[in-house]
Amino acid sequence: MPLRRLALAAALAPALLAPAASAAPIPLDGLDLSADHLTVTVTDTGGHDGRYELYCHPAGGTHPRAKEACDQLDGQTTWGKDLFAPVPKGSDCTMVYGGPDRAHVSGTWAGRPVNADFSKANGCEMARWNRFSTVFGESKGSPKKAPARSPLA
Image (cartoon, rainbow, N blue to C red; front, side, top):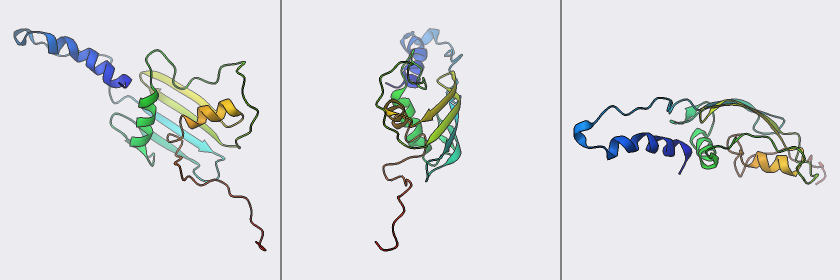
């Protein structure tokens, strides 16, 4: 169950279980369901560079696939974990370079400030990037830099 739904269910449970005669307003303090807003800047991808505003709950903004991006984030959000945490220092990562792609994400997600940088510098960073691929505007058919073709080919 996504974190947002879990928080809403926890807030509503006491009111739903109480007798109707003692119904009181549902306390939604701290549950601003429209506060998830991220600014996503993607560079050096060779196909989908840009700056997007992403709003979730409800999905909107200038992101080309806002609903899918919000769903990707919701599906990974876990209580007590920083979704945007960097790769831990000292991690054993394959030394495979995935390209010059860079992204920066800032804003607020699940009530927490976000200020995260992404790259494809090695295997760990590429795996982290892939967890946010839709947020970065990629799709399975996203264009990438194609190698130059010889005019004789």
